[in-house]
Every structure is written in structure tokens, then in C-alpha cells.
Amino acid sequence: MKFDRRKFIGSAASAAIFPQQVFAAGSGARLPASVDAVTLSGGTTSLGKAQLQELAGALNGSLLLPGGDTYESARRIWNGVFDRKPALIVQSSGPADVMQAVNFAREHNLLLAVRGGGHSLAGKSVCDGGLMIDLTHMNGVHVDRQRRVARVEGGALLRNLDHETIPLGLATTSGTVSHTGAGGLTLGGGIGRLCRQHGLASDNLLSVDVVTADGKLLRAAEDENAELFWGLRGGGGNFGVATSFEYRLHPFDDEVLGGAMMYPLDEAAEVLKFVNDFSARAHRELSLSGNIVMLPNGRGFAVMSVTYSGDLRKGEKHIRPLLEFGDPVRKGVKRASYRSLQTSNDRQLAKGRKYYMKSGYLPELAPEYIDELIARVEPSPQREQVIVMTQLGGAIRDLPADATAYAHRYGEFDLMIGAAWDDPQHTQANVDWGREYFAAVQDYTDGFYVNSLMDESQDDVQRNYLGNYSRLVALKNIHDPGNLFRMNANIKPSVSTG
Image 1 (cartoon, rainbow, N blue to C red):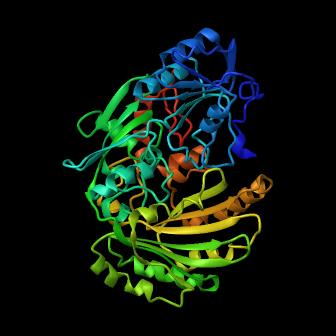
Image 2 (image 1 turned 180 degrees about the horizontal axis):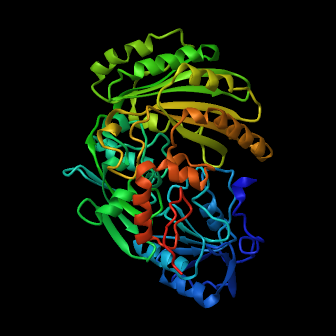
Image 3 (image 1 turned 180 degrees about the vertical axis):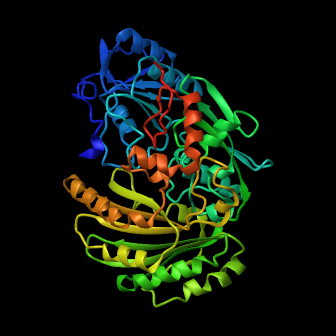
């Protein structure tokens, strides 16, 4: 499959047999004589026992090698399509461990992946045969209630963030699945239920601590390393390993108006047209999407998903036309806990299932777009299918396109075409379905959400950053001229490192 084009050149490194599992400082565990690993150029290198011992001894966390449950758990990511096996995993306990791991990867020219929440659609959180930095244990969240600021470690999940902020009557924009990593979501921009009201997750950043390719820990903010701060807000993981984030918080009541209105599939065109028309007058406090769902049993639905996070009395009046539209088979919009909505997709999008998804920004839900989208929904026992059109705008447009690296401030909807399945025998057929479906509607789109990167080309990535790309390349030349951080929507440096 094309997914595994970095499948290890002879899987010697990833399949090596080591009776040991975890090598922590002072553990006394015996290291193997050597480990073969994949380099940035795609070749192999042998890491000797002394080199491994030096790395293990420098860590407060753990060095994991193939064999055993700890290694297996660390390498498994959200999208079960990817079954990659790093030669070694550094399970970091803090920024100092990250610095050690980055230095080791650079000095030995190792292919490097960084796992925060492990939610990369394209499997970029893990590599075959290289070194993986695992931030799982760096998941703390500290809230300064007086300043309305949350400090969040690089491995924290959205549920960790919401758990600490919501009970204090505070919140910031996060995504829509609670086991997503806060760091990866934010570095790619950060679309979520509150983005029309408060801007993208990255728009609410105050600072980022990041370990760059030279192994230095830098603070990036408006008043320090400002250009790097600009690039981190939408430029993904191209510039280093983000070990902590500071977010601006907003007063927030956990009670919102939220849920879904479900309609028969044969009413999908009318539902999506209504979503398009209503979106033009939607309040900023309203997060609205029009969706098509097709289950493996052949049952399909059109769905309007709603979250209103402002004054509920005003909200009830504002969304009344949504609640009164058509003849739904299920009315599920009511007063609800925001945190319950944030976890409502967790089971459907569970870790370990197999996913293929593609994203593109739409200027509107024009009738011809709607007809094409609906016509290509076809029942299949091999997969669940979902077509999601999430309204953007609102506070996202308060900033110009060059205010941060995130350039797509003016898209009206984020279109996402997705398939989910469990049986690996159906993977190729489902991937082919997703590619063909998106290829048929791609001309309606303009760019894509980098957090939905799947199998886009390097040219696609370059075009996607619009007028910000050359500035991002200049930043890459400074902080990662050797392109150590390439497991991402990659911005290639233009300088030669010899």
C-alpha cells in the first residue's frame, strides 16, 4: 500500500528480537549489542551498545526497544491502518528528555517521529525503523484562574484540558474528539466547537516552549522568538517538538445547546441547502455542520450537528429555525453539557480502528456541490461513511491570512470525507473509495486543513500555505535546515546542509 512507503527497508531493525523492554536510567537492564535503525536518507545505521547506554543514561524517562507491552503500547497510534515499528522510542518525562532525544536523532541522522496524542490521520506520529519521541507522560495541565491562562504539556489530550478548565468556568477552543492531542491540533490551526466564537486553538496561544533541531529549548511568543511563534500557529510540527503551550482562556458555562437533528437520506439535498442558507446569518456562538452518514447496514441519514455556546435564551430563539426545519427522524438538540458533547464522538472514532479521511475548504455549499456529494454516497458493508461540512468563519476571520501560518481564514466550510472500518482485508478497497470520492469533488475545494493531511503531495502542501509558504521556508532554514522534522505536512528547507 502507498501508506507504508516508508515501510522499513528490510524490517531487521523493527523486527529485531530483544528480551529487554524498557531501559531507564539506573535500571540496570542489559542493552543489546547493537540496534539497526533507519536514517533520514532511507538507509540504515547501526547504533552500538555504548551509544544506546549513553542515551538511556541521559533520560529521566525511558528508552523502549522492540519487544514487550510497553513498547507495543507506545508505538500504537489512533489510526489502526498504520502498523509501524520504530527501532527505538524515547518516552519523555519532560523537556530535558526531549532535548536528549532530538540531539541523538540529529547526531545519528535518524528518521524521527513525534507522538503527542498520536492522532495523526496519516500516521506521522510514528515511523518505521527510526526514533520516536513519545510525549504521552507529559500530559499535565495547570490553570491560572486569575490570569485566565492554561499551561498545557505537549502530550496532553483535549480531555485533560477540558477537565481542568471547564469546572473553573473557563475554556478555549479545542477539537471535537476528546482523545485528540492538544499539541498536534493546535500546531495545525485548531478547528473546534468554539472556533467561530473565540478563534482557532492557535489563535488563543500565548506562548509555546519548543525544542528545535539543534536541541535547544526556546520560548516562542509575541515578545520572544516572534517569527517562530508565527510559524508554530498553523505550521504543524515542522519547527520542533512543542513541550508546552500557554492558552488564553475565556469565561465559559458548561451548559450549551447542542446535539443533532437527523433526517432521511433522501432529504439530504434540502438539509444541506438549509445549512448553507442558515450559515449566512448564524451567530458566532453557533457551531453548525451538515453531515451525511452511511452505515454498513445500508441505512443512511442527513444530519445537522449544532452547538450554541452563548446566552442560551438568545440561542434558543436563534436556532429555532434549525429545530423546526423539515420532519426529522430524531431531534437531539437540547441543553447539554459541553464536556459531554466533546466526548460524544469518542466511541465512533475509537483508537485502533482504521480510517481514511480527506479534507478541503469549500467557499459554499452550492447546489452542484451538494448533488455531487450525495450522488457518491453508496452503501457498503465494508465501511462506515461520513461526509462532514463544518461551518467556519466568525472569529476565524478576525485575523488576516498572514497573521499566523494558518492561511485559510476565508473558507466557509471544511469538507471532510471519511471512512472507518475494522477488518484489515477491506483497507485497500476503502482507501480507493475515499481517494476516488475526493478526487471527484476536489475541484470544488480550495486548500485543506493540515490536521487532516492524508496522502497529499509535496506540491499540495506548498500550495496549501498560500502566500505564507516562502516565509515558512525561511523559518525552516533557520530552525531545521536539515529537515529533521519531516513527519508532517512538510515544509522543505531551501538551504543545503552539506
